[in-house]
Image 1 (spheres, each protein chain N blue to C red):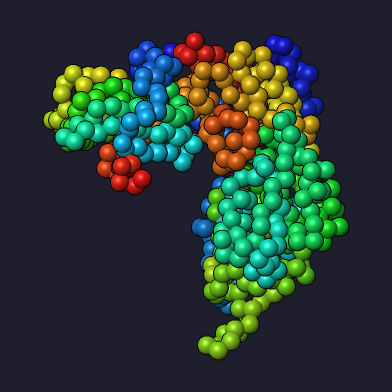
Image 2: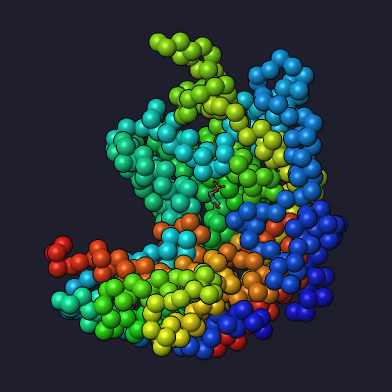
Length: 417
Length: 154
Ligand SMILES: Cc1ncc(COP(=O)(O)O)c(C=O)c1O
């Protein structure tokens, strides 16, 4: 298929990718003398100007610490920070008091592991994860296992990368206290049936934590509809700044949990004998929070909403399909992960060329992809690969980016013959 | 094609990458160490037979990695043969400087003929993220001859 034809068949009527690109300063960067073709948004997305400007404006003229001073500037900062919480809550269909700001999804998962873990788990209790988790949703449970003797069970996937719901069901039992599963695999792109997973887990009496790092970016989430108990995501993959993440938790559950970190802002009353803690979310936000980052995240969400998550998803799916097709035509290239439900993430290997060599060589053409194990070593083992190269697509990518990737991969083939 | 890329992926490197020398597990190795690049998941094991005069009588490796790390391991196992641990250390030091582009105007210690061979890998200096790939085998060898004494641990 020629590019022009592809453009036509894949066009998402009113989706003006050039206008969107104009909103992202990084889209006009040159790398190694070539226009940047950024295909690593799955690791971290570029930021639209509105996010950068919002954060800049806040630092310049609306900045003070929050929840502290009885003066106008601090009130203004607090208002902004709490409004950001409102924006996030609306985005996920949650209530504001169910939104805890954290540093990242990694921090959100660790919070659940330690707080929920200490309060509700005991030796021998089971946590079920999947074979395609990011290390962020494996290692915290292993740390907890080492401390408390919990048992980790791993739900399998098939060779295409599909989550096997019937196998998952078999793992659940009276000792299962928590199911912690990714919404979308950062390697295979697999979208997991989180609503069904949640229903099944609840029937078994277990709570559910969803790692939404990739999922929320491409699919969004309605936590009321899914009915999960916790849902975490990270701001920097959603076109927001680094240093900000979110943990959604059902209100009653959050308020039943002990604090994770101690410090200022999370207490009601402190004496040296006894301290009482505030309700969620304050209970979990010890110390000065990432104030401006939260406001930047809200600006990113506003931007995503203004374009429309559905339209973005449709655009990204078109890119994914075109990439799967074009990459599939390359001799010796193997796509890793062909699940039925797949986000805009395409991992692959190329015969005779290690993913690192691929990434270095195509970078010289301006094409940025991730190479390595993608913080999912157990999944790499499962797929019988040491590493993969991964192209991930975001709202600002276009058909030409896929063509550039394919051309650059042909250079790799020339070198490695 | 880009000059830096051409320099990095020279024929010699591609050849060593594709057909690594000394890619085996010698039964009589008395030292070994595992090297691992946590950033990319590359792993290799270096095996050494060290003589009583601390001369390297055999060096080999196994593992998986990119063309640069495999080529570097392959070339290294050839070059260190017959050298003493002290000589290997000096050579590693030179090589490290080369890879980081810190060898300009610096007197290198190793034999010119070895340095010439290693110089084909110096293209990594243009790619800071890849320096580790080129030096992984050397770090691992270093660990093998110093810490990985199999005769004392088994
Ligand atoms: C599925 C998944 N979970 C967790 C993470 C960790 O995100 P962060 O490093 O922002 O905490 C990532 C991103 O790398 C991811 O893709």
